[in-house]
Image (tube, rainbow, N blue to C red; front, top):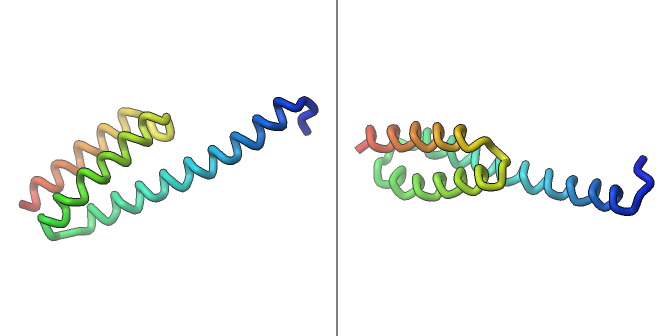
Length: 84
């Protein structure tokens, strides 16, 4: 167990950040699945900007790698464009 005050605080803060990151990443994954499973073009076009925004936010905070976010955005955009 940590002895220093600062290391105890670091443990607490990193645990809180980990929970927040897990929640945001899981929410984004669920949104991606919802977008992939939709067959309605208009619904997909309204969901796409929201999902892209979520991916950008995760990449900005280094929860996911920026290239992974880029690849996901590209594939999802191609999918939505093929629906219409």
